[in-house]
Amino acid sequence: MSSPHGPYRIAALYRFAVVSDCEAVRARLQKLCEAGEARGTLLVAREGLNGTIAGPQAGVDAVVAGIRAMPGFDALEVKYAWADTPPFLRLKVRIKSEIVTMGQPDLDPATNAGAYVSPADWNALIADPETLVIDTRNTYEGRIGAFEGAVQPDTDSFRDFPDWFRTEGQALLEARRPKRVAMYCTGGIRCEKSTAFLKSEGVEAVYHLQGGILNYLETMDEADSLWRGECFVFDERVSVGHGLTPGDHSLCRACRMPVDAAGRASPHYVEGVSCEQCWSARDADQRARYAERQRQVEIARQRGLDHIGARQGDDG
Image (cartoon, rainbow, N blue to C red; front, side, top):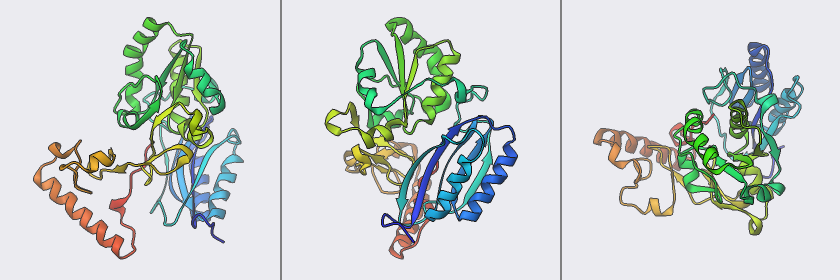
């Protein structure tokens, strides 16, 4: 029996826990997903598990239950959503060196991450002038929304964060001499790893927002919120606001960057082809290919079909 929210249950999940036999876990997850008719991507590494799957509710719930039954995974973080159409066309279960790519595979977030802070306690922590607040996300994410007073590293990828911290981040610590550092990301996984990284660099008083921005926006009353703007998400919603309501941003299919209403009003914005941020970097041949892809997307949409070119890619 399908849910009134839609027939496809989506589960975004992760857990830092020691995996001693990655191939055995990969095979187990593959079997669980195939049995439950779940599709999506799951990444397995020695440091844990990360991914997003979707399928019939019973099948997805069986996969989650099977993961939680594995040693060290009983506290698996899961965020659920619903979809009317299949969000993923294939199943991929892969072994990686990291479940979120930072270029630091020897960290131990399972035992050495910073202290969790609940959304209810987050405001007081980041409003304290003795707290240095750092956004661990990428430039384009911070551009559309952030917490008041947060430092934006302006990195292009999470892999750039260690270099930023060892230069500019350390300089900030020396200049401000904060008593503590508070870090946040979209759903929690990046700030768990980045707090472990800071601790490995000698910073002891490190905290992170439990469940990330999404948990905060879902549970915090907007009138009391210190969040400003919208939160970029790596699915077809593109951005969300308080209560996880859909935001104002769409996705440029050429450069994969979020575009707001003002951006869509630009003469350089052509749906599926270009936006203000990327139009000058594309030549005529590229624009022609993007235009043809968009034409195929529109044809599929009119026929009530799904087209792979219309989907947003997964993010680690």
